Length: 383
Length: 156
Image (cartoon, rainbow over all chains, first blue to last red; front, side, top):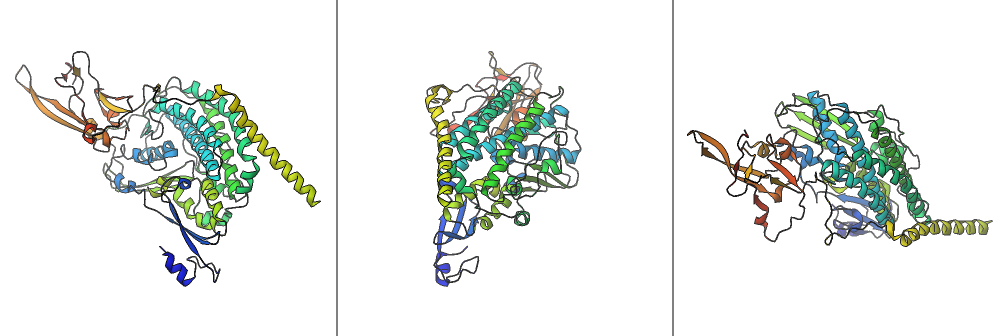
Protein backbone atom coordinates (compact mmCIF):
# COMPACT_ATOMS: atom_id res chain seq x y z
CA UNK A 1 0.00 0.00 0.00
CA UNK A 2 1.28 3.45 -0.88
CA UNK A 3 0.73 6.29 1.50
CA UNK A 4 -0.26 9.60 -0.01
CA UNK A 5 2.68 11.40 1.56
CA UNK A 6 5.21 8.94 0.12
CA UNK A 7 4.00 9.52 -3.37
CA UNK A 8 3.77 13.27 -2.99
CA UNK A 9 7.19 13.58 -1.37
CA UNK A 10 9.04 11.47 -3.84
CA UNK A 11 6.97 12.72 -6.73
CA UNK A 12 6.99 9.31 -8.20
CA UNK A 13 4.11 7.19 -9.28
CA UNK A 14 3.87 3.69 -7.87
CA UNK A 15 3.73 2.33 -11.37
CA UNK A 16 6.80 4.41 -12.31
CA UNK A 17 5.31 5.00 -15.71
CA UNK A 18 7.98 7.54 -16.55
CA UNK A 19 5.73 10.55 -16.17
CA UNK A 20 8.48 12.38 -14.33
CA UNK A 21 7.97 15.45 -12.21
CA UNK A 22 4.29 15.84 -11.53
CA UNK A 23 1.92 16.36 -8.66
CA UNK A 24 0.07 13.17 -7.92
CA UNK A 25 -3.06 12.81 -5.95
CA UNK A 26 -4.28 9.60 -4.34
CA UNK A 27 -8.01 9.05 -4.09
CA UNK A 28 -9.86 6.23 -2.42
CA UNK A 29 -12.89 4.97 -4.29
CA UNK A 30 -14.85 2.77 -1.96
CA UNK A 31 -15.06 0.52 -0.03
CA UNK A 32 -18.53 2.00 0.27
CA UNK A 33 -19.22 3.66 -3.02
CA UNK A 34 -22.37 3.45 -5.13
CA UNK A 35 -20.47 2.89 -8.36
CA UNK A 36 -18.45 -0.10 -7.21
CA UNK A 37 -21.48 -2.43 -6.73
CA UNK A 38 -20.20 -3.68 -3.43
CA UNK A 39 -17.31 -3.30 -1.10
CA UNK A 40 -14.52 -2.83 -3.60
CA UNK A 41 -11.79 -0.46 -2.50
CA UNK A 42 -9.78 1.16 -5.28
CA UNK A 43 -6.78 3.35 -4.50
CA UNK A 44 -6.37 5.59 -7.53
CA UNK A 45 -3.31 7.68 -8.23
CA UNK A 46 -4.18 10.66 -10.36
CA UNK A 47 -2.24 13.17 -12.35
CA UNK A 48 -4.81 15.88 -12.70
CA UNK A 49 -7.72 13.93 -14.11
CA UNK A 50 -5.64 11.21 -15.73
CA UNK A 51 -5.38 7.87 -14.00
CA UNK A 52 -1.79 6.81 -13.31
CA UNK A 53 -2.47 3.73 -11.27
CA UNK A 54 -5.44 1.78 -9.95
CA UNK A 55 -4.84 -0.53 -7.06
CA UNK A 56 -7.70 -2.70 -5.84
CA UNK A 57 -7.67 -3.54 -2.14
CA UNK A 58 -9.48 -6.74 -1.37
CA UNK A 59 -10.68 -8.50 1.71
CA UNK A 60 -13.67 -6.48 2.85
CA UNK A 61 -16.10 -9.28 2.10
CA UNK A 62 -13.79 -12.23 2.56
CA UNK A 63 -15.67 -15.10 4.18
CA UNK A 64 -13.02 -17.78 3.72
CA UNK A 65 -15.39 -19.95 1.74
CA UNK A 66 -12.57 -22.23 0.58
CA UNK A 67 -11.52 -22.95 4.16
CA UNK A 68 -15.13 -23.39 5.24
CA UNK A 69 -15.67 -25.98 2.52
CA UNK A 70 -12.98 -28.17 4.06
CA UNK A 71 -15.30 -28.93 6.96
CA UNK A 72 -18.43 -29.44 4.87
CA UNK A 73 -19.47 -32.63 3.15
CA UNK A 74 -19.79 -32.95 -0.61
CA UNK A 75 -23.51 -32.27 -0.44
CA UNK A 76 -23.16 -29.29 1.87
CA UNK A 77 -20.36 -27.32 0.24
CA UNK A 78 -22.40 -26.58 -2.88
CA UNK A 79 -24.59 -23.97 -1.17
CA UNK A 80 -21.57 -21.79 -0.33
CA UNK A 81 -20.81 -21.25 -4.01
CA UNK A 82 -24.14 -19.47 -4.53
CA UNK A 83 -22.78 -16.83 -2.18
CA UNK A 84 -19.74 -16.17 -4.35
CA UNK A 85 -21.00 -15.01 -7.71
CA UNK A 86 -24.56 -14.54 -6.59
CA UNK A 87 -25.71 -13.52 -10.05
CA UNK A 88 -24.74 -16.84 -11.60
CA UNK A 89 -25.35 -19.01 -8.57
CA UNK A 90 -26.94 -21.78 -10.60
CA UNK A 91 -23.87 -22.10 -12.78
CA UNK A 92 -21.54 -22.18 -9.79
CA UNK A 93 -23.64 -24.86 -8.14
CA UNK A 94 -23.68 -26.74 -11.41
CA UNK A 95 -19.90 -26.79 -11.53
CA UNK A 96 -19.60 -28.13 -7.98
CA UNK A 97 -22.21 -30.80 -8.54
CA UNK A 98 -20.49 -31.79 -11.78
CA UNK A 99 -17.07 -32.12 -10.15
CA UNK A 100 -18.49 -34.46 -7.50
CA UNK A 101 -20.27 -36.48 -10.19
CA UNK A 102 -17.09 -36.64 -12.24
CA UNK A 103 -15.11 -37.95 -9.28
CA UNK A 104 -17.72 -40.54 -8.34
CA UNK A 105 -18.52 -41.37 -11.99
CA UNK A 106 -22.23 -40.81 -11.49
CA UNK A 107 -24.21 -40.82 -14.72
CA UNK A 108 -26.96 -38.23 -14.40
CA UNK A 109 -30.34 -38.65 -16.13
CA UNK A 110 -30.98 -36.91 -19.43
CA UNK A 111 -33.84 -34.89 -17.95
CA UNK A 112 -31.57 -33.46 -15.26
CA UNK A 113 -29.10 -32.37 -17.93
CA UNK A 114 -31.79 -30.49 -19.80
CA UNK A 115 -33.06 -28.83 -16.64
CA UNK A 116 -29.55 -27.82 -15.67
CA UNK A 117 -28.67 -26.27 -19.01
CA UNK A 118 -31.96 -24.38 -19.30
CA UNK A 119 -31.60 -22.95 -15.81
CA UNK A 120 -27.95 -22.08 -16.48
CA UNK A 121 -28.89 -20.08 -19.51
CA UNK A 122 -31.77 -18.36 -17.72
CA UNK A 123 -29.32 -17.40 -14.99
CA UNK A 124 -26.94 -16.03 -17.58
CA UNK A 125 -29.76 -13.98 -19.07
CA UNK A 126 -30.76 -12.63 -15.65
CA UNK A 127 -27.15 -11.77 -14.89
CA UNK A 128 -26.63 -9.94 -18.16
CA UNK A 129 -29.88 -8.06 -17.70
CA UNK A 130 -28.78 -6.85 -14.30
CA UNK A 131 -25.39 -5.95 -15.72
CA UNK A 132 -27.04 -3.96 -18.50
CA UNK A 133 -29.15 -1.98 -16.07
CA UNK A 134 -26.36 -1.41 -13.60
CA UNK A 135 -23.90 -0.45 -16.31
CA UNK A 136 -26.31 2.15 -17.69
CA UNK A 137 -26.83 3.46 -14.18
CA UNK A 138 -23.07 3.77 -13.65
CA UNK A 139 -22.84 5.92 -16.71
CA UNK A 140 -25.72 8.08 -15.59
CA UNK A 141 -28.86 6.69 -17.20
CA UNK A 142 -31.42 5.63 -14.62
CA UNK A 143 -34.27 4.51 -16.88
CA UNK A 144 -32.63 1.37 -18.37
CA UNK A 145 -32.18 0.02 -14.87
CA UNK A 146 -35.93 -0.30 -14.44
CA UNK A 147 -36.43 -1.88 -17.84
CA UNK A 148 -33.75 -4.44 -17.10
CA UNK A 149 -35.27 -5.30 -13.75
CA UNK A 150 -38.71 -5.73 -15.24
CA UNK A 151 -37.48 -8.58 -17.44
CA UNK A 152 -35.22 -9.98 -14.76
CA UNK A 153 -38.16 -10.18 -12.42
CA UNK A 154 -39.82 -12.67 -14.77
CA UNK A 155 -36.79 -14.96 -14.60
CA UNK A 156 -36.66 -14.56 -10.83
CA UNK A 157 -40.31 -15.59 -10.61
CA UNK A 158 -39.60 -18.68 -12.71
CA UNK A 159 -36.69 -19.55 -10.45
CA UNK A 160 -38.77 -18.96 -7.34
CA UNK A 161 -41.47 -21.28 -8.58
CA UNK A 162 -39.19 -24.12 -9.61
CA UNK A 163 -36.24 -23.85 -7.22
CA UNK A 164 -37.81 -22.15 -4.23
CA UNK A 165 -35.44 -19.19 -4.10
CA UNK A 166 -34.73 -16.15 -6.19
CA UNK A 167 -30.99 -15.71 -5.88
CA UNK A 168 -29.27 -18.44 -3.87
CA UNK A 169 -31.04 -21.46 -5.24
CA UNK A 170 -28.94 -24.46 -4.19
CA UNK A 171 -30.98 -26.44 -6.73
CA UNK A 172 -28.19 -28.55 -8.21
CA UNK A 173 -27.27 -31.55 -6.11
CA UNK A 174 -24.78 -34.32 -6.90
CA UNK A 175 -26.73 -36.67 -9.14
CA UNK A 176 -29.13 -34.22 -10.70
CA UNK A 177 -31.43 -31.51 -9.41
CA UNK A 178 -33.24 -31.19 -6.11
CA UNK A 179 -36.86 -31.23 -7.29
CA UNK A 180 -38.59 -31.87 -10.56
CA UNK A 181 -39.61 -28.93 -12.70
CA UNK A 182 -42.73 -27.09 -11.68
CA UNK A 183 -45.68 -27.93 -13.99
CA UNK A 184 -45.88 -24.27 -15.05
CA UNK A 185 -42.19 -24.06 -15.93
CA UNK A 186 -42.34 -24.65 -19.67
CA UNK A 187 -45.32 -22.35 -20.16
CA UNK A 188 -43.74 -19.52 -18.21
CA UNK A 189 -40.35 -19.83 -19.90
CA UNK A 190 -42.04 -19.68 -23.31
CA UNK A 191 -43.95 -16.61 -22.20
CA UNK A 192 -40.72 -15.04 -21.04
CA UNK A 193 -38.91 -15.79 -24.31
CA UNK A 194 -41.71 -14.25 -26.35
CA UNK A 195 -41.78 -11.22 -24.09
CA UNK A 196 -38.03 -10.72 -23.91
CA UNK A 197 -37.57 -11.03 -27.66
CA UNK A 198 -39.68 -7.94 -28.15
CA UNK A 199 -37.88 -6.10 -25.37
CA UNK A 200 -34.28 -6.82 -26.32
CA UNK A 201 -34.66 -4.47 -29.28
CA UNK A 202 -35.81 -1.79 -26.86
CA UNK A 203 -32.50 -2.22 -25.06
CA UNK A 204 -30.67 -1.30 -28.25
CA UNK A 205 -33.06 1.55 -28.91
CA UNK A 206 -32.72 3.22 -25.56
CA UNK A 207 -29.04 2.68 -24.79
CA UNK A 208 -26.87 1.16 -27.51
CA UNK A 209 -27.74 3.77 -30.09
CA UNK A 210 -27.60 6.66 -27.65
CA UNK A 211 -24.92 9.12 -28.63
CA UNK A 212 -23.97 10.05 -25.07
CA UNK A 213 -23.53 6.41 -24.14
CA UNK A 214 -21.45 5.68 -27.22
CA UNK A 215 -19.15 8.60 -26.56
CA UNK A 216 -18.69 7.43 -22.98
CA UNK A 217 -17.68 3.87 -23.83
CA UNK A 218 -16.08 3.88 -27.26
CA UNK A 219 -12.30 3.75 -27.33
CA UNK A 220 -11.76 3.54 -23.58
CA UNK A 221 -10.48 0.66 -21.49
CA UNK A 222 -8.42 -0.90 -24.27
CA UNK A 223 -7.31 -4.45 -23.57
CA UNK A 224 -5.38 -6.13 -26.35
CA UNK A 225 -5.62 -9.84 -27.10
CA UNK A 226 -2.16 -10.54 -25.68
CA UNK A 227 -2.91 -8.64 -22.48
CA UNK A 228 -6.26 -10.36 -22.05
CA UNK A 229 -4.51 -13.73 -22.23
CA UNK A 230 -1.65 -12.77 -19.93
CA UNK A 231 -3.98 -11.32 -17.28
CA UNK A 232 -6.02 -14.50 -17.39
CA UNK A 233 -9.22 -12.75 -18.41
CA UNK A 234 -12.09 -14.99 -19.38
CA UNK A 235 -15.67 -14.61 -20.40
CA UNK A 236 -17.06 -11.61 -22.26
CA UNK A 237 -14.12 -9.48 -21.07
CA UNK A 238 -11.66 -11.64 -22.98
CA UNK A 239 -13.98 -12.43 -25.89
CA UNK A 240 -14.31 -8.71 -26.59
CA UNK A 241 -10.53 -8.70 -27.10
CA UNK A 242 -10.75 -11.45 -29.68
CA UNK A 243 -9.80 -14.36 -27.43
CA UNK A 244 -11.78 -17.52 -28.05
CA UNK A 245 -12.36 -18.78 -24.52
CA UNK A 246 -15.95 -19.99 -24.21
CA UNK A 247 -15.78 -23.14 -22.08
CA UNK A 248 -19.14 -24.20 -23.49
CA UNK A 249 -17.56 -24.42 -26.94
CA UNK A 250 -13.98 -25.45 -26.15
CA UNK A 251 -14.65 -28.04 -23.44
CA UNK A 252 -18.35 -28.83 -23.82
CA UNK A 253 -20.06 -30.17 -20.73
CA UNK A 254 -23.56 -31.59 -20.31
CA UNK A 255 -25.50 -30.92 -23.51
CA UNK A 256 -23.52 -28.07 -24.97
CA UNK A 257 -21.94 -30.11 -27.77
CA UNK A 258 -25.40 -30.90 -29.18
CA UNK A 259 -26.73 -27.36 -29.05
CA UNK A 260 -26.45 -24.85 -31.82
CA UNK A 261 -25.11 -21.54 -30.64
CA UNK A 262 -22.34 -19.13 -31.56
CA UNK A 263 -19.40 -18.06 -29.52
CA UNK A 264 -19.49 -14.28 -29.64
CA UNK A 265 -16.09 -12.81 -30.40
CA UNK A 266 -15.49 -9.14 -30.94
CA UNK A 267 -12.17 -7.59 -31.82
CA UNK A 268 -13.02 -4.07 -30.71
CA UNK A 269 -10.99 -4.48 -27.48
CA UNK A 270 -12.68 -1.47 -25.85
CA UNK A 271 -15.56 -1.02 -23.42
CA UNK A 272 -18.09 -0.83 -26.24
CA UNK A 273 -16.92 -4.20 -27.58
CA UNK A 274 -17.44 -5.77 -24.16
CA UNK A 275 -20.90 -4.21 -24.07
CA UNK A 276 -21.74 -5.62 -27.47
CA UNK A 277 -20.48 -9.11 -26.63
CA UNK A 278 -22.83 -9.29 -23.66
CA UNK A 279 -25.76 -7.98 -25.66
CA UNK A 280 -25.14 -10.64 -28.32
CA UNK A 281 -24.74 -13.32 -25.67
CA UNK A 282 -28.21 -12.62 -24.38
CA UNK A 283 -29.57 -13.47 -27.83
CA UNK A 284 -27.52 -16.68 -27.91
CA UNK A 285 -28.80 -17.70 -24.48
CA UNK A 286 -32.34 -17.16 -25.69
CA UNK A 287 -31.55 -19.37 -28.67
CA UNK A 288 -30.25 -22.16 -26.41
CA UNK A 289 -33.30 -22.04 -24.15
CA UNK A 290 -35.59 -22.05 -27.17
CA UNK A 291 -33.93 -25.18 -28.54
CA UNK A 292 -34.24 -27.12 -25.30
CA UNK A 293 -37.51 -26.01 -23.77
CA UNK A 294 -39.73 -28.13 -26.02
CA UNK A 295 -37.60 -31.26 -25.89
CA UNK A 296 -37.20 -31.91 -22.17
CA UNK A 297 -37.33 -35.71 -21.95
CA UNK A 298 -39.42 -37.52 -19.38
CA UNK A 299 -37.73 -39.54 -16.69
CA UNK A 300 -35.92 -39.15 -13.42
CA UNK A 301 -34.56 -35.81 -12.36
CA UNK A 302 -32.02 -37.25 -9.97
CA UNK A 303 -29.74 -40.26 -10.15
CA UNK A 304 -29.65 -42.57 -7.15
CA UNK A 305 -26.66 -41.71 -5.00
CA UNK A 306 -25.36 -43.00 -1.70
CA UNK A 307 -26.44 -41.18 1.43
CA UNK A 308 -22.82 -40.39 2.33
CA UNK A 309 -20.62 -39.34 -0.54
CA UNK A 310 -16.95 -40.27 -0.33
CA UNK A 311 -14.73 -39.11 -3.13
CA UNK A 312 -11.84 -41.37 -4.14
CA UNK A 313 -8.34 -40.17 -3.37
CA UNK A 314 -7.12 -37.77 -6.00
CA UNK A 315 -7.48 -34.34 -7.54
CA UNK A 316 -10.45 -33.22 -9.60
CA UNK A 317 -10.95 -30.08 -11.63
CA UNK A 318 -14.13 -29.04 -13.40
CA UNK A 319 -14.86 -25.82 -15.18
CA UNK A 320 -17.93 -24.12 -16.52
CA UNK A 321 -18.71 -20.86 -18.24
CA UNK A 322 -20.51 -18.47 -15.92
CA UNK A 323 -21.91 -15.12 -16.97
CA UNK A 324 -18.53 -13.57 -16.16
CA UNK A 325 -16.11 -16.17 -17.43
CA UNK A 326 -14.53 -19.43 -16.52
CA UNK A 327 -15.41 -20.78 -13.10
CA UNK A 328 -13.43 -23.76 -11.88
CA UNK A 329 -13.61 -26.06 -8.88
CA UNK A 330 -10.47 -27.89 -7.87
CA UNK A 331 -11.00 -30.57 -5.25
CA UNK A 332 -8.19 -32.44 -3.52
CA UNK A 333 -9.62 -35.52 -1.87
CA UNK A 334 -7.98 -37.81 0.65
CA UNK A 335 -10.83 -40.30 0.44
CA UNK A 336 -12.83 -38.82 3.31
CA UNK A 337 -16.34 -37.40 3.40
CA UNK A 338 -15.03 -33.85 3.36
CA UNK A 339 -12.57 -32.38 0.86
CA UNK A 340 -8.94 -31.98 1.91
CA UNK A 341 -8.65 -28.74 0.00
CA UNK A 342 -10.92 -26.83 -2.33
CA UNK A 343 -9.87 -24.07 -4.66
CA UNK A 344 -12.35 -21.99 -6.59
CA UNK A 345 -11.15 -20.27 -9.71
CA UNK A 346 -13.44 -17.31 -9.99
CA UNK A 347 -13.61 -15.19 -13.13
CA UNK A 348 -14.04 -11.88 -11.34
CA UNK A 349 -10.63 -11.99 -9.69
CA UNK A 350 -8.69 -12.33 -12.93
CA UNK A 351 -10.85 -9.81 -14.73
CA UNK A 352 -10.29 -7.29 -11.94
CA UNK A 353 -6.52 -7.74 -12.24
CA UNK A 354 -6.71 -6.29 -15.75
CA UNK A 355 -8.50 -3.16 -14.50
CA UNK A 356 -5.26 -1.30 -13.78
CA UNK A 357 -4.04 -1.97 -17.30
CA UNK A 358 -7.33 -0.89 -18.85
CA UNK A 359 -7.78 2.26 -16.80
CA UNK A 360 -4.23 3.62 -17.03
CA UNK A 361 -4.11 6.80 -19.07
CA UNK A 362 -7.87 7.24 -19.12
CA UNK A 363 -9.75 9.99 -17.34
CA UNK A 364 -11.20 9.32 -13.90
CA UNK A 365 -14.74 9.65 -15.23
CA UNK A 366 -14.11 6.71 -17.54
CA UNK A 367 -13.09 4.42 -14.70
CA UNK A 368 -16.70 3.73 -13.78
CA UNK A 369 -17.55 2.97 -17.40
CA UNK A 370 -14.63 0.56 -17.62
CA UNK A 371 -15.56 -1.13 -14.36
CA UNK A 372 -19.13 -1.42 -15.54
CA UNK A 373 -18.15 -3.36 -18.62
CA UNK A 374 -15.93 -5.82 -16.73
CA UNK A 375 -19.08 -6.73 -14.78
CA UNK A 376 -17.53 -7.13 -11.36
CA UNK A 377 -19.28 -9.02 -8.61
CA UNK A 378 -17.32 -8.35 -5.45
CA UNK A 379 -18.15 -11.48 -3.40
CA UNK A 380 -16.87 -13.46 -6.38
CA UNK A 381 -13.52 -11.68 -6.15
CA UNK A 382 -13.08 -11.98 -2.40
CA UNK A 383 -14.74 -15.31 -1.71
CA UNK B 1 -16.89 19.82 -45.48
CA UNK B 2 -16.17 20.18 -41.78
CA UNK B 3 -19.44 21.98 -41.25
CA UNK B 4 -21.33 19.30 -43.13
CA UNK B 5 -19.83 16.55 -40.97
CA UNK B 6 -20.56 18.52 -37.84
CA UNK B 7 -24.19 19.09 -38.74
CA UNK B 8 -24.76 15.45 -39.68
CA UNK B 9 -23.15 14.36 -36.41
CA UNK B 10 -25.39 16.64 -34.38
CA UNK B 11 -28.44 15.52 -36.32
CA UNK B 12 -27.55 11.86 -35.70
CA UNK B 13 -27.07 12.56 -32.00
CA UNK B 14 -30.41 14.31 -31.67
CA UNK B 15 -32.07 11.47 -33.57
CA UNK B 16 -30.62 8.85 -31.22
CA UNK B 17 -31.73 10.81 -28.18
CA UNK B 18 -35.24 11.25 -29.54
CA UNK B 19 -35.42 7.54 -30.27
CA UNK B 20 -34.66 6.77 -26.64
CA UNK B 21 -37.07 9.42 -25.40
CA UNK B 22 -39.79 7.97 -27.59
CA UNK B 23 -39.53 4.70 -25.71
CA UNK B 24 -39.57 6.46 -22.35
CA UNK B 25 -42.59 8.43 -23.51
CA UNK B 26 -44.35 5.23 -24.52
CA UNK B 27 -44.17 3.83 -21.01
CA UNK B 28 -45.09 7.19 -19.53
CA UNK B 29 -48.36 7.19 -21.46
CA UNK B 30 -49.09 3.44 -21.13
CA UNK B 31 -49.73 3.10 -17.42
CA UNK B 32 -51.08 -0.45 -17.79
CA UNK B 33 -47.62 -1.81 -18.53
CA UNK B 34 -46.24 -0.62 -15.21
CA UNK B 35 -45.74 -3.58 -12.93
CA UNK B 36 -45.01 -2.02 -9.54
CA UNK B 37 -46.08 -4.13 -6.58
CA UNK B 38 -47.34 -2.31 -3.50
CA UNK B 39 -45.65 -4.65 -1.07
CA UNK B 40 -46.55 -3.78 2.52
CA UNK B 41 -50.18 -3.11 1.66
CA UNK B 42 -50.62 -6.06 -0.69
CA UNK B 43 -48.75 -9.20 0.29
CA UNK B 44 -47.07 -11.07 -2.56
CA UNK B 45 -48.38 -14.43 -3.68
CA UNK B 46 -45.44 -16.73 -3.05
CA UNK B 47 -45.16 -20.10 -4.80
CA UNK B 48 -45.51 -23.22 -2.69
CA UNK B 49 -41.84 -24.14 -3.04
CA UNK B 50 -40.62 -20.82 -1.70
CA UNK B 51 -38.21 -21.32 1.18
CA UNK B 52 -38.98 -18.96 4.01
CA UNK B 53 -38.27 -20.95 7.18
CA UNK B 54 -38.26 -24.54 8.37
CA UNK B 55 -41.44 -25.68 10.09
CA UNK B 56 -42.55 -29.00 11.49
CA UNK B 57 -45.83 -30.39 10.24
CA UNK B 58 -48.40 -31.20 12.91
CA UNK B 59 -51.73 -32.82 12.24
CA UNK B 60 -55.02 -32.14 14.04
CA UNK B 61 -54.15 -34.60 16.86
CA UNK B 62 -51.02 -32.58 17.61
CA UNK B 63 -48.85 -35.36 16.24
CA UNK B 64 -45.77 -35.02 14.04
CA UNK B 65 -43.60 -37.43 12.08
CA UNK B 66 -40.21 -36.63 13.62
CA UNK B 67 -38.48 -39.70 15.04
CA UNK B 68 -35.38 -37.87 16.24
CA UNK B 69 -33.02 -39.58 13.79
CA UNK B 70 -30.92 -36.35 13.45
CA UNK B 71 -30.54 -36.76 9.68
CA UNK B 72 -31.43 -33.08 9.26
CA UNK B 73 -28.95 -32.06 11.93
CA UNK B 74 -26.19 -33.89 10.07
CA UNK B 75 -27.28 -32.54 6.70
CA UNK B 76 -27.30 -28.90 7.83
CA UNK B 77 -24.15 -27.05 6.80
CA UNK B 78 -24.49 -24.27 9.39
CA UNK B 79 -25.48 -26.01 12.60
CA UNK B 80 -28.94 -24.50 12.38
CA UNK B 81 -30.75 -27.51 13.80
CA UNK B 82 -30.18 -29.11 17.18
CA UNK B 83 -32.29 -32.06 18.23
CA UNK B 84 -32.53 -32.95 21.88
CA UNK B 85 -33.81 -36.49 22.36
CA UNK B 86 -35.26 -38.31 25.33
CA UNK B 87 -36.35 -41.86 26.01
CA UNK B 88 -40.06 -42.61 26.19
CA UNK B 89 -41.30 -45.72 27.92
CA UNK B 90 -43.62 -47.65 25.62
CA UNK B 91 -46.65 -49.56 27.04
CA UNK B 92 -44.65 -52.75 26.71
CA UNK B 93 -42.10 -51.33 29.10
CA UNK B 94 -39.41 -50.78 26.46
CA UNK B 95 -37.39 -47.63 26.04
CA UNK B 96 -38.00 -45.73 22.82
CA UNK B 97 -36.06 -42.75 21.47
CA UNK B 98 -38.17 -39.68 20.83
CA UNK B 99 -37.55 -35.99 20.40
CA UNK B 100 -37.73 -33.69 23.36
CA UNK B 101 -36.99 -30.39 21.60
CA UNK B 102 -36.36 -29.54 17.98
CA UNK B 103 -34.29 -26.37 18.23
CA UNK B 104 -34.12 -24.28 15.08
CA UNK B 105 -31.81 -21.26 14.85
CA UNK B 106 -33.39 -19.10 12.19
CA UNK B 107 -30.56 -16.57 12.40
CA UNK B 108 -28.10 -19.19 11.12
CA UNK B 109 -30.33 -20.68 8.45
CA UNK B 110 -29.50 -20.12 4.78
CA UNK B 111 -32.66 -21.82 3.44
CA UNK B 112 -30.68 -24.36 1.44
CA UNK B 113 -33.38 -27.03 1.81
CA UNK B 114 -30.85 -29.79 2.59
CA UNK B 115 -32.56 -30.72 5.88
CA UNK B 116 -35.95 -31.13 4.21
CA UNK B 117 -34.28 -33.20 1.50
CA UNK B 118 -32.57 -35.41 4.09
CA UNK B 119 -35.62 -36.07 6.29
CA UNK B 120 -36.68 -39.72 5.80
CA UNK B 121 -40.18 -39.26 7.23
CA UNK B 122 -41.16 -35.90 5.76
CA UNK B 123 -41.55 -34.33 9.19
CA UNK B 124 -40.22 -30.90 8.31
CA UNK B 125 -40.91 -28.62 5.40
CA UNK B 126 -40.30 -25.07 4.25
CA UNK B 127 -42.93 -22.41 4.95
CA UNK B 128 -43.62 -19.32 2.89
CA UNK B 129 -43.28 -16.78 5.70
CA UNK B 130 -40.47 -14.39 4.87
CA UNK B 131 -40.94 -11.51 7.30
CA UNK B 132 -38.51 -12.58 9.98
CA UNK B 133 -37.46 -9.32 11.59
CA UNK B 134 -37.72 -9.27 15.38
CA UNK B 135 -36.60 -6.84 18.05
CA UNK B 136 -34.94 -9.44 20.24
CA UNK B 137 -32.38 -11.77 18.75
CA UNK B 138 -33.38 -14.61 21.05
CA UNK B 139 -36.78 -14.74 19.34
CA UNK B 140 -35.06 -16.20 16.30
CA UNK B 141 -34.24 -19.41 18.13
CA UNK B 142 -37.37 -21.42 17.75
CA UNK B 143 -38.76 -24.63 19.12
CA UNK B 144 -40.41 -26.40 16.21
CA UNK B 145 -42.32 -29.19 17.93
CA UNK B 146 -45.47 -27.88 19.58
CA UNK B 147 -45.88 -28.41 23.32
CA UNK B 148 -47.48 -31.73 24.15
CA UNK B 149 -46.98 -33.12 20.65
CA UNK B 150 -45.85 -36.68 20.07
CA UNK B 151 -44.77 -38.94 17.23
CA UNK B 152 -47.54 -40.21 14.99
CA UNK B 153 -48.12 -43.91 15.47
CA UNK B 154 -46.55 -46.05 12.79
CA UNK B 155 -43.76 -43.64 11.87
CA UNK B 156 -40.41 -45.33 12.26
